[in-house]
Length: 49
Image (cartoon, rainbow, N blue to C red; front, side, top):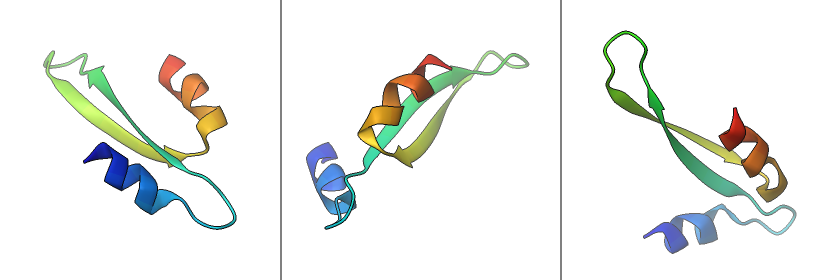
């Protein structure tokens, strides 16, 4: 399924990657998911935040 998502995001001019990370809420302690579509070079910096 992930391969289909990544393959559908590729266009003729740019390659894009969909990144998903879990973030813990400080109030409730529950985890939420944050999704973002970006260039492959920006993924590591986004995940490190």
